[in-house]
Amino acid sequence: MLDGITRAFTDVFKTISGKSTINENNIQKALADVRVALLEADVNIKVVRKFINDVTESALGEKVLRSVNPGEQFIKTFHDKLVEILGDKSQAFKLKPKDTLSTIFLAGLQGSGKTTTAGKLAKFIKDQEQRNILLVACDVYRPAAIDQLQKIGQLAGVEVFVGDRKNPVKIAKESIKYARKNNFDVVIIDSAGRLHIDKDMMDEAQKIAKEVKPDEILFVSDSMTGQNAVEVAKEFDNILEITGVILTKFDSDTRGGAALSIKTVIGKPIKFIGVSEKIDGIEVFYPDRIATRILGMGDIVSLVEKAEQVYEEEEVKKLEKKIRKSEFTLQDFLEQLEQIGKMGPLEGLLEMIPGMKSQMQNVNIDEKKIKRQKAIIQSMTLKERFDFRLIIGSRKRRIAKGSGVSVLEVDKLLKNFKKSRQMMKNMVKNKGNIPGLDIGNMM
Image (cartoon, rainbow, N blue to C red; front, side, top):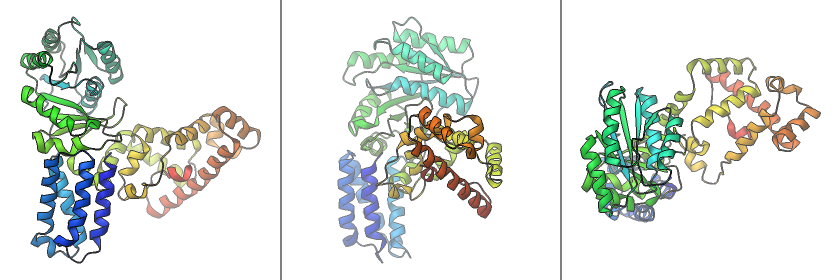
């Protein structure tokens, strides 16, 4: 997301990097371009003015003028001010100690993704905090909303409370009693989507909040709605006193106005972001990490955390040993593709690598191509996967037919696999540790 802003910031840094000093003349044009980029991204005008003024004031300060490298200091100024408008630091999630019931109430407009987010949040808390979660279906108005939550609950591996399927306030109240009786740690209430101008629905939300006294009232908003989401969040905050925001579809081609405006305008932090449609597609919002991504500087910390979630230390050591002994097989490669897939879209992962964002501007990451690579290997027998030298003649034709590709594509995969296999062996031998798979070379 926020590609337009990233490009504008990158151009600014190129302009400033060669300057011996930073002064009003050489940053005026640069900041004018930034202003346009922010407004085009639908960032609130007050936020844009504050950001430009703060950057200008800091960039022209005595500390920067005395710097050995003004360009790097200017980038740091941008980063620091960007972090400020995003929220300074990640906001702790309010959960009571284990064996004490915590309640989370999700509110928002129709179509903002509350039901899906409720399931994602349940799985996140269950996995990260080892809590016993109860989802509560309080959307009795939207057709099939309860059925949808039950299916999502199954994916997340948590129970769903439906009550009488008629009265949201009663359902919420009874869910708390049920949760206490059955030793649940966390209750997540999925409320009905409502228009902020719908008085009856907003009154109902107030009644639910008053009845269950939630520890967190989170406003769920679609990132693609831009700064309009900020105005809606303000209305919800006036009525419900929200404690934070979850931005859905953060991985989409969104302009980013909501992410860069909410904290400054309503004073409430973004706590989570939705990063994919999968049940585990939710992340804690770290302002400093998002700022580095926006500036095209990557996010290596998040990348490492994602890797740690899918890779066991013993597996890594075992794989490294195979590479050292030239025993890395097509089956190993297939398993690595599966593991990488669990970490999220490949384009998003590559953008987390420092410096990769700018290199990818004219590169099209074809996820379908990766699926074809997997299909080719899956069409092989286990014997062939463990010894690629067996794949000749009729075997190639059979594999190509089974995976729906040409023999030439099978040849290309085998050729690139051999090359990458040797390259990884050399890198491990020289550096003493296992490198990332050279997916690009395998294509």
